[in-house]
Amino acid sequence: MLEPLDFYFDFSSPYGYLASEKIDQLAARYGRQVSWRPILLGVVFKRTGAAPLTLVPLKGEYSRHDFARSARLLDVPYTHPANFPLATQHAARAYYWLHDENGEAARRFAQVLFRALYVERRDISDLDVVLELATRHGVDRDALFAALTGPALKERLQAECGAALDKGVFGSPYIIVDGEPFFGVDRLPQIERWLDSGGF
Amino acid sequence: MLEPLDFYFDFSSPYGYLASEKIDQLAARYGRQVSWRPILLGVVFKRTGAAPLTLVPLKGEYSRHDFARSARLLDVPYTHPANFPLATQHAARAYYWLHDENGEAARRFAQVLFRALYVERRDISDLDVVLELATRHGVDRDALFAALTGPALKERLQAECGAALDKGVFGSPYIIVDGEPFFGVDRLPQIERWLDSGGF
Image (tube, rainbow over all chains, first blue to last red; front, side, top):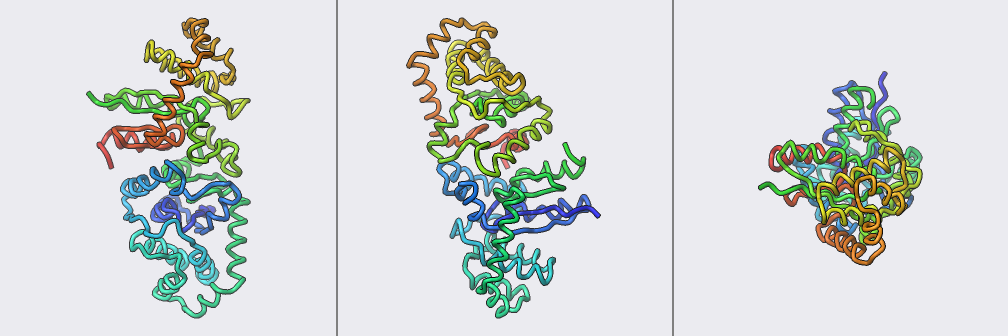
């Protein structure tokens, strides 16, 4: 049995969104599945000292230009969120809560969240928006609300972020293929080559 | 007459070196020349708040792994320098001094400097090493020494760095094609596609 690819991302990462639209199909071409692992870049940046991309002088302007350009290159719809950067702890916690019930439903819900943010321009930092999207996705709103406002799920996400840091994850998307790390959506062609040839 | 590509780099940048081994041939396939423009990342990082890649927690380990991996992917020889990161003002100033006499000789000297650092593991932060390499390259050592220790060339490099910042350059390599910016050696395939199709 081939190992799944580990796909680390923050819902607030445009490059993470672009990767999310491609990674499953890419992996499937090589008989692989993908383990989706949302994290909080805020936690990661405390370790690395980095700042949100769009807030960095010069790099911020380039990145806003490049989000749209990369989306065109990948043929993925993209509109820049009105509220950006944004807090994604509700989204990430909802993902893990759902994941423990049904991994495939959680993966599909992650896509719902990403597309709500980057296609429909919904503000998924808002707890009510996450609850609304989850309800439309067939989730019990009251149960999710109770979980999202309790301590266990908060600790769960903290543990996931800590485990990601232990794996060396410093950004989004960060994809690990059989122990080999790749950072950035622009590395998808390299990941494909790696899967195709078993290394380079 | 098609415009040359602007190729900004720091001699201390491994990804800049890798790009330097490919950019002229890539551009030539589309009838383009390349204007090589060494800068100092130290000056750029003062504006952006960034730190040298290898000194960033987690990202540093990844980058050291990725320098060698990217070199294998591009089929370019690479050995990590013993002294790294390193100061490159002598190298960059020598480039511009030579450039004002003979642009093609300067471009070839830039390759001599890059290969001295990343293949032969010479410490090109050392003024004597730059002078030795220049002398072997046919340069008048005394004239270059006088220029490298005078104020004019220092100001010239400062002006080049300032002009690069004005163009939005925040890292190395940073390549501008007809006003379109691309950051990183992993964007070479995108640059090729851009040149081939006139945009995407």
